Amino acid sequence: MVHSRRGFSLVELLVVIAIIGLMVGLLLPAVQSAREAGRRTACTNNLRQLGIALHHFHDHAGAFPAGWRGGSSAAEEPEYDLPGWGWGARLLPQIESGALHDRIDFTKPVFDAEGGDVHREVRETLLAAFRCPSDLPGPTEQAGVFEVGHDDGHDEHDHAEEPEDGHHLGHPVDGGELSTVCRAAKSNYVGVFGWSRSIEHQPAAGDGLFFRNSRISFRHITDGASKTLMLGERGSRLGGSVWSGVIHDAEAARARIVGVGDHAPNAGDHFDDFSSRHPGGSVFLRADTSTLFLTDAVDEDVLHSLCTRAGGEAVPGEP
Figure 1: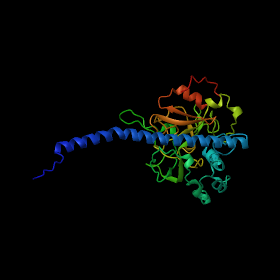
Figure 2: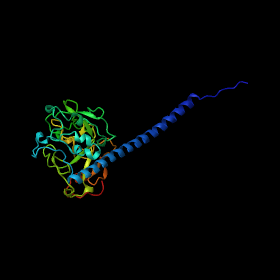
Figure 3: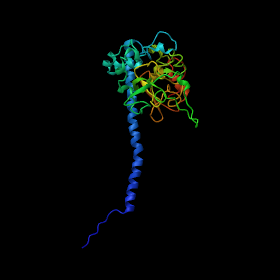
């Protein structure tokens, strides 16, 4: 007796392949969404831990750390930003990085080429607490460390480029035609400078919680801690933000550690705005250590009111 073997016909094989392809097409977005949900949760936890660290610092010092430390003058000239160590550097003991904190001479600049750059290893140290897992590498970034662009003498707010399609693209602050000042480890979290004042022209007069030589305590937050933003996200598409502080001679040096809430997240116009790689918005930290996801479509009046510590504005409901 002859036994015949029955195999798949070409049509059947193509149908199976089509079904598998369809299933993969349906499952892939769900898998990507689940992964992003996990990354966003990790980002939110990072901000919450930084908020707790800021509260611990406040308990010991009687105020939150300064946005960055500089000279006593309120002038806008960059030399008054020295030595420049920012709020993130002051938090190191509170985020289990006390040994790194002890290596910093806070009387010397974050970057000083003429002084031997004694803080190079400190400045290039990656800290997981300051990194959002959803962020992608910036223009010059490699393994979380990037080449900081040199100041080209222009106001960062004047740098928006407008292509032929009329869509604004922010001016990169690293790479391109900009030379390199130094290297630094990135941060995805910046302090809230406010919204109505200019970082470039009024660096010591922010209406938020962090600016040059700021010493803001809870008694200054008359709008209420639950209605005042303390930290927000900054993506790396246009260049790197830092945890260390103001890097002398860098492009957008002050904006690398603080942000301005004059535009909705991911508006794409300026480096000093808040932004992220999360779909649809960015995560923020309130002064009471609670977190808030603000969408890209948030009403700018609401954002403005949340970015001031004592503006007296009425926040119209939860954004």
